[in-house]
Image 1 (cartoon, rainbow, N blue to C red):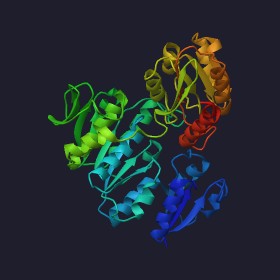
Image 2 (tube, helix red, strand yellow):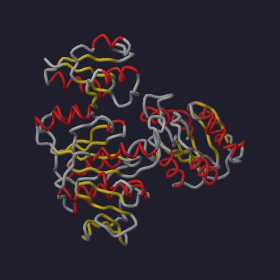
Image 3 (cartoon, rainbow, N blue to C red):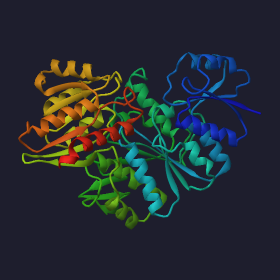
Image 4 (cartoon, rainbow, N blue to C red):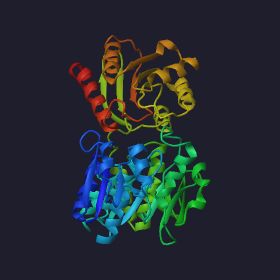
Length: 441
């Protein structure tokens, strides 16, 4: 019997364990909280054929010992792919990028299902790939959101359609520099050949620098130029043929237009009718935690809108969110990813009325804001969401603001210093706001 060691008992680790059990492999589960500790795991290495590292785990001493022993280190994505190819005819659409991949993944899967094509959104979006492939041939397509972490330890994985939405610096606490992060993203198209498709955003210079890494058939996409998938006079085109007008799309904003181009382009590659695409794009709802306008508070003085953008986990995403509103109050902060903060600081100085800082990154953000001459009286370093909402509640109920306002949670960083994930952070924010404001409205 073959034997696998799984490092990490989170959702992907537990899911791949079930997959190995289906394959009749023996498994050893390593987790410093709920399983064999990473220190003790060394004693269990005898006979291990494969080592599966959960994406969020760093390359620590245990991983180095595994590699020294010559044991192959892979990701759950690799295991699930190999199982899928042996047991089903399901096809894979693989989506990555710094921003927009969750919207693109979930909405593309939704569109495929609306067209009668059995599909599921999986991977980094929630449902593990391993869980989806266990339901053999239930799905015609698995639409995979893949983080850079999930793209690190792949060998045979291959997508029928691959895409990178965009690239901006992120996760520099993990990677040597931005180039290493960008290069890792391009593993989404590994092993492709001329029979596979790779949708390329030609508006992104970092993507264009790396076109020689693509072996699949390239389809070019642009918000600016006339190309394979593009916009012209408020219409969306695929290979010079009009698909749909854009004026009634339910997903608003320029960033969503980019996501929609990817969604529609993939849909046309699969052969979905224009009427189905139009109907879906005009009626689909925005995602929870992504520019989600979830509550409006009114008093005699003004109207306060609350926006939950907890999915804004990097600088680029938060800067776009800030730009979507007129002088918002920003709640910002989380893990320190070792990023250059200057672009965010400049956007806050230019466009934010007040900033409320939370998490590990708060002192660093405060220091750079002060160094950039952002008014000290408009910075509130309160560390926790609870303190932020309490403080805002007091100020708003005391009518300290004369005009209508938007309160925007867009952290510009990941949540793991204080929360399980960005979903928990968003849910807690919404709960706190509703508890603080709803009773009196």
